[in-house]
Amino acid sequence: MHFYSLALLGSPLEPLTYHSETLLSIGRKVSVTLSNRETEGVVLCEVEKPEFKTNSILDVLPFVYSESQIKIAQFMAEYYGCSLGEALNLVVPFERVDSRVHGNDNPPVIPAKAEIQLKEYTNVTITLSSIQIQALDFIRSHPVSLLFGDTGAGKSEIYMCRMDEVLREGKRALLLLPEISLTPQMQERFERHFGDAVVLWHSKMTPKQKKVTLSKILDGSARIVAGPRSALFLPIDDLGLIVVDEEHDESYKSSSRPRYNARDMAIYTGSVLKIPVVLGSATPSLSSYAKYPFYRLRGGYYHAKRTFVFEPSIEALTPSLDRAIEKNHEGGHQGIVFIPTRANFKSIRCESCGNSIECPFCSVGMSLHRNVRALKCHYCNYTEILPRLCPKCHSGHLVTSRLGTAEAVEHFEKQFPDIRIAQFDRDIITTQNKLIKVLKAFNNREIDLLVGTQMLSKGHDYHDITLAIVMGIDNLLSQADYRARERALSLLIQIAGRSGRKNSSTVIVQSFNESFFRNYLDDYETFLKDEQRLREGRYPPSKKLARLLYAHKNGLKAKGEMEAAVAILRGFCEIEIIGFGASPIEKIGSKYRFQILLRSGRSTDLIRAVRSVKSPLCEIDMDPIEFT
Image 1: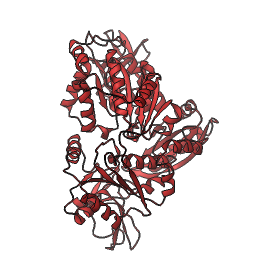
Image 2 (image 1 turned 90 degrees about the vertical axis):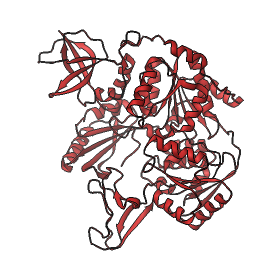
Image 3 (image 1 turned 135 degrees about the vertical axis):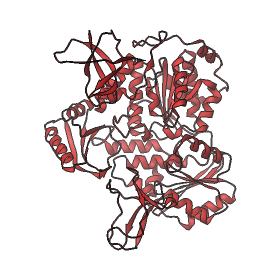
Image 4 (image 1 turned 180 degrees about the horizontal axis):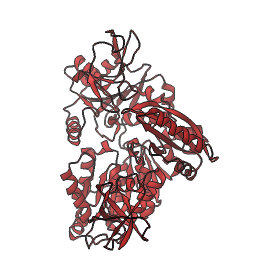
């Protein structure tokens, strides 16, 4: 009889011991029971026979996790405060085939199909400028490097040339992208060069599409794999390069347990596999700028003039915006309008009593969706019919605040019936096919004006956008978040960068903070240096942060757990308790939420302190980027 320590996939429990009459290899996936329920686990190691009674392993499955996959998952569990089973649940294992991986990371034999593609993958020759060649030399010479390149400076071409080199070595490359950057344009660009050697992986694929893609990855025919953060955990056994494009993007940070950052996990993965990692962005995060060697790639292929016009205004559909849109359309050009908020309006309140109509399950205002005559919570998705009277005082004086994309679309359609307008946000773009359809229509000049949220900033490269309107940027700048300045400026630069590719463009910004934005619009590096000095000794990158979030339907229970943790944490002199109490959004999905925010100079001190207060009610968020 053999006894094994197993990590149960998706379970918050620590490893448990099971027995089997079969000798099993480390990393093997098996089927077991837990509390009379069948589940799956991963063999971590063989152990001595315990004193307690153990359950039998039910079945040995034809999948195996490699040594490096387990090591990466162990780091995630240790750093981000989750269980090993939760970390391994993100990882796609290898299929157990004799000619492939057997849990010991031996390099597999590349099938003949892949060898043919290695000879034929380059369909379009890339010619780099002298500056791009210098950038390529730079990223070759560093294990981790940051390609700090202006919009349109040719970062993608540098990525592809570096991938060429890796493929010639018989290895493969992984390109990580923010989810919504998996555009038809990006796909076409890589397929034009690499042909069928490119595969995409993302959450909007059907199970059948995922199965086909995974088979190409496992048999070696997929040489370039592109996808969002989940693609990092695919079974690519001969990986030679990881590229993290738009590395500043917040979608790389998971908003649910385990709250890992795919950019940082990519860097750790590179260190485990001993392969280079390239980060790229026109507006890199301050943490990457301060930590990694970078090459500053200035300028670009586009030399059209871009003029910024600031309108001191809150979010409002003003006559000047209408005139700008009308004039741009008369010139035969396209435009984009950015608004931070979806729906018609962010909130609805009563003028008589001041009551704001909140979600019954979350302590946030409901958003107005007039097309379906409903109020919707953007946190838990609860929806109710739009009321005619105030639920509190029964007055009919209901007013709205915080303009949304749907309201703007309705306004522009009414003002300009001849302008073809499309809404571009998560309310409309719910599938990959819808994304492809809208962007294709825009590229074919079937749409004149795109009105959307931050999706507008994600890597879309169309050459006849001569007007960009940015609304609500002051709401981002004034958020109670140490990264508010960085997020607002980065977003403005990214959206402005969608315009002026071919012809001169105008960027209209509704803001009362013109002086701040103008100081840095043409010199983001100066902003990063100034911001680094401003945060020194208080916030990342000079300090490390951790957020402990306690949630329960019984608010007193969640609060009690938090207070007990605070009492323990006060005994750690290496960390500082910045604050604790009710979360800014105190209730989501009927659960009351309390939080503790910690600060320290070293990650190890934070991890040690956090592990001392582990609780089933607590969710650990290392390096948090949201604080609500």
